Image (tube, rainbow, N blue to C red):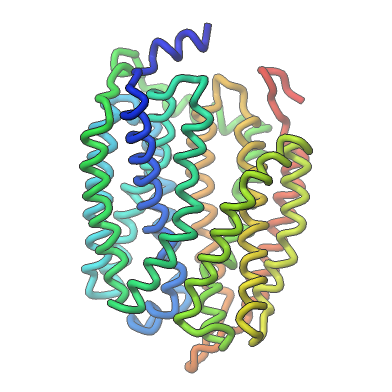
Length: 413
């Protein structure tokens, strides 16, 4: 009966238009992921140009995630009250303008405000893209469609960030933001052409029980454990990741022109390994695979924070191993989280989970910036303390994963 209702709600498209729509949604995901990720490797450049501390740079990164978390949480109250197409195009246009403002920012304060605006408008895009896939693609092909849209993260790591860094090194830090804004214009036009109106949901009486829905989700003990696992998983990685480039460049491990290879090698490794990691997750169990990868990831994380000047290939092996294990945690981790709520609460739970992850990521970035220290010559110290905090967060995530109850066909296990 549920599948029958879903087919009635789905608005069928020709296969060609469907493929164009999926590519457009993947492009939209790609643009806002690159917009977020490009800030991290530009850390040395921005701290020098604006004469700011690592903590102030951490605020630049975390401001985006805090704003994205807030907008994602608020979006659950109005996302179903407007046409999908109109809402997506509105938010994407505002996101493009905010990204353009980042490139035009004349000072640290102006850039910080622009990053908050980009987070507010960009934080809704991922949830909307996944919602549109559910509205448009029939159930039998939805897995393939979702996989295509979600590959945007790996492509952003492999191609988007290195290309953005090459632009920044050649034409200044403003140029990646101008390029992203231009890409948004192109993708916005594609979305206007390929996307149906998607307003079939408007006749439903959504009502106001948003606060009650959130209270019911948050009061559930299993949901609380799952959200703790989710938050600590994100916190474990982002006390370290935003500062890898500052540490490697400031401590003479890599030159500025070598930094893009961190993301190129790491992105290629995760893109190639994703299929196998997904297969092993299904074969060995989501909880077991998550705990295994969480444990393994501690090794390259601590190696990253203790690394001394070494040949380039060794530094790239360490960073690639770290990216690979981080992605290896996310695949089973997200599969476990989607099974932590019963189907009737899954949408609300995942919306809140997205907000929790954004806030945890922002907090981790800010805490990492407070822990590490940089001297007048740019040498970074105390990075290992940020790694230690990440290790402790990994332990919390490992424990919480064992406490999460998995629902399979409405039956907890």
